[in-house]
Amino acid sequence: MVNKRITAVMAIMVAGLAVSSTGCFTQLGPTLGVFGIPIPVSPYYQKLEEDKFHVHERYARVPVMGPLTAGGPVEALDPPSDDEVWWALERASSVQGGVPFLFETQRNNVTMVKEKIADYVDPPRVVPLIGPAQLHHAHYKCTVYFTERKIVGWPVPHTLVDEDAVEVLYLDHNHFHMVGNVDLGRNNTHY
Image (tube, rainbow, N blue to C red; front, side, top):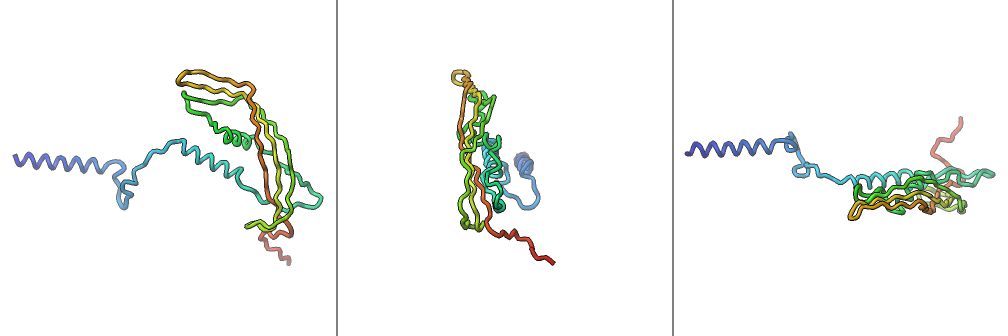
């Protein structure tokens, strides 16, 4: 009888050891303990971070350009790209596809019209971390024409189509121009 109990206890100990030393728990050296087990994260949050980085990388920074030359063009040369207008449209309307089979939004037959409404340069001033600079403002009115299709799947499945949807966005392209004799950090000594 005692032999059967010892055998049962030994079998439970061996089973516990086998279960605890499999998968994520098998590791030599220091471990993170409970924090070593991966926690699932929704792809929604991953997309939010990727979108935020995309906008920051391309559109959220103000570039510092070389000084304006006498007699040179003072007009902004780059209107907003189609990608920038589309990102601004999605951010303004907070529509990015929707939830499949529940509520979806599609925008088709897109046409974008970009008009410059203002282009001017501020007088020189000292800007922290830049130095003497001028702020060049360029304001654009972007009109987006498209066909919007909303597909609702629950509680009553139906589709709404707006053939003549129009959105108007106002985008600013601001950048700095350095002022004066600019030292770009190069060694200007001539021998």
